[in-house]
Image (cartoon, rainbow, N blue to C red; front, side, top):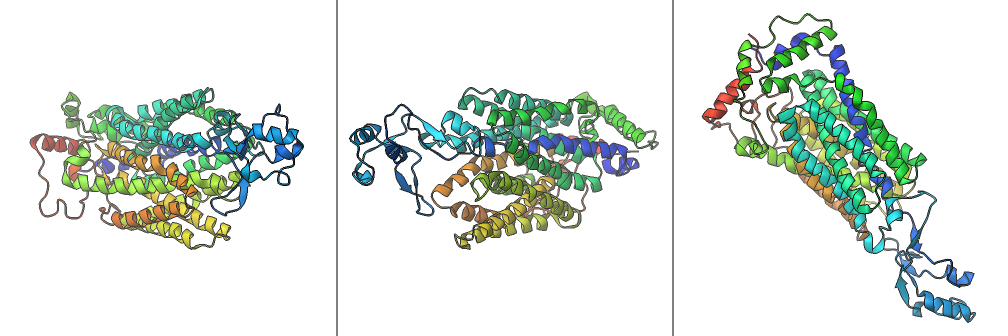
Length: 557
């Protein structure tokens, strides 16, 4: 008797079928590189000050002095106020009397008022952003980080439902339905009449983005052989994601109006419609559902594409009994039901949460770095490319556990070192931040693939979805880590660095999966330290029958 991978070994590792699946699934990940992350440009805050209406009768001297100076919180240098102006009524009286500001009038004694007529924005970098269009500044500046958090709330919701839908209805259908959802709602977002509508569409985009990413990731993991699977789950999808991320600042540079930018980013999604006829369903998933004939049909078509003669019988005919519908459906509760799975899940949830906070906070922070926003965003994307290559190399030749630990711990140290850098060494601080981004990107890539290896086929998408869902609590609060810069520039780095280093130590408790076959059933899973080693978990009667059925679904006579 042999397992699934032995049963399908006749296909080889890298034939035409595997190459097509590898490339096409990676291609579906490309829009996710700029999806959601365009908020860095769409919601960037241009330099602004209170608007002084043209009809107000002020001399040039008083108009130029109408905005009070304030101390910048970081450097202490005087800068123009962004949220207040001198009382226009008082300024008009001084102007009519021919008095001069600073000479005849002590401006410190002049009363101030809020920006009652709105704001004027610097148009040298952006033609428009949602900040300038809907005045999300001063009393409304809390809406800026909330906008990103709404997107990640959508990602949280998508993580919660997509895994279970994918395990129930199939990887392929969830992949294409959510790709369509992401594309259509990005197009709808272009016509948003208000910030509220923008956020509502952004929420749905978040649901679609994480759902199609997870479906593509798991689909490739289950179809491809062990060697190719490693390249796919680390370097493959990640490099295409990074390529999409690198394209974003290029689009933003030429499309400086936020509506045109979002429109330009929505159109590539329509190019993926023909892929429905080229990407197959996961044979592993079909077997777990008892749909043996469909699984065999896909494998025979794959053999035909690879110019290989398949065996007369691929899977045991007794698998047809699984089509009776008596199988128990798995759900997210199964991740907590057994002690071994429970501890693995809780540990991974904490690690994913920390990695998500660090990755998205550092990505969203590019607009705040010194220098050109477009170049900084491109640099942030560029640094991810060698990280993806490194993650593939580490995943191919190194221990999963040690790979995750080393990247998390080193990333935490890089971010903590930023606190020690003098304030005038700006480019050195940016270098350490990019090194931290490099490490956390490598860790994110590794933890995705590591998680898929730890869980069995019957729970894999649900488990990856649950881990992604847990991480979204981190991504939801990630924008507010950046918001802490208003109190202390180094505070976000201290918090993120400490969390990453501690999570790296925690990851050492996870079981090793290097060199192990993918588990097909719960009984095949590796053990968490202290769980199921001396006293194995005993399956209930229903679970035992299900486990036997799962084992049968992956054998040949």
